[in-house]
Length: 340
Ligand SMILES: NC(=O)c1ccc[n+]([C@@H]2O[C@H](COP(=O)([O-])OP(=O)(O)OC[C@H]3O[C@@H](n4cnc5c(N)ncnc54)[C@H](O)[C@@H]3O)[C@@H](O)[C@H]2O)c1
Ligand SMILES: O[C@H]1[C@H](O)[C@@H](O)[C@H](O)[C@@H](O)[C@H]1O
Image 1 (cartoon, rainbow, N blue to C red):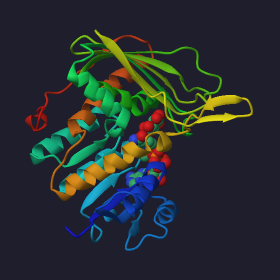
Image 2 (image 1 turned 120 degrees about the horizontal axis):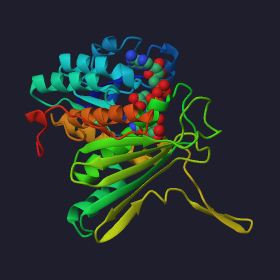
Image 3 (image 1 turned 135 degrees about the horizontal axis):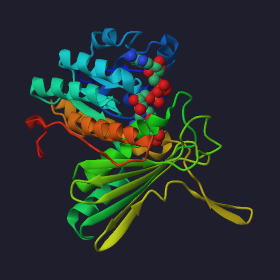
Image 4 (image 1 turned 135 degrees about the vertical axis):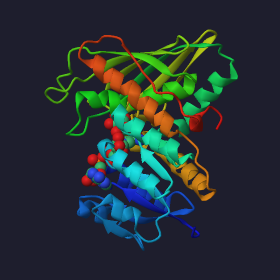
């Protein structure tokens, strides 16, 4: 390995371009060695001003480019399976944006491929685990002061959804964050899901079932509800309140400045995830680079990515009827045993 970890970034859209900037200017110990995007112009724009980067239209060409020692996957979810398997075939460590693979069969295929290698290579980009507020909430729940958790109430609102966003993506892309956060905060798998929906907002694109209300049960009898509303129009809001036997704790209220002017005071609301979770992405990528340089893999695993996909797929099945759908998980390979 050189002085700096050479990273290939696959996908130079919103997240890919932001991660390229982060690898170049924010985190230490890494450099962007190659970028792939079928839209070559977008890739060229994202690497403008960077030295010694090669630009490709094919993901595999970027993985094979000179100086590449690790991969950051920021292409759309349906492209992740092929990219993960290509990285595994080359023994390259990976940070893969969520959702790991949106469909469960594809996610299972990735799980089996990594389990066959017998060592972890991939970290999944559930960045909320690196957010300061989520970490405080996790520490509070773990120290037991509030007693046993009974419920999580979650809110996930986006100003607007991208043009190609589907009703299923509210669950398998947006709520994938709450699925992972709930499993991590509560330390148990989610065993069932029901997805209800009010009448769609007139602010949502025609045909998009937005908002939705998602209810999960956990293996030890807690409940998790999520309001997901991806065309709310007014701001990016992510909240989580844990209600426990001896108290409650809520995060996500306090992200902007309080602005006072002309006889009124108002709180600023962030407009997107790149602002709200900026510190979390920085910490996530720095932690990945540091671990990779030490030959280690930490953070959310391929098992976490697979479990999130299985829960989300059950949610998408519930979306039509609102019926409670049980989550079926494959046996957990020993590679992902707790504490490893
Ligand atoms: N962690 C988060 O909070 C967060 C936020 C936004 C997006 N994401 C995830 O990041 C990923 C990218 O989302 P985005 O918003 O940047 O999308 P985007 O549409 O802005 O960008 C995707 C880019 O990937 C390119 N692409 C398509 N197929 C490709 C392939 N096979 N190989 C390489 N590049 C390919 C596209 O041309 C495009 O430039 C998704 O998985 C999304 O769910 C995560
Ligand atoms: O892909 C994005 C991303 O995961 C954001 O964090 C989430 O708020 C959006 O709803 C989703 O579309």
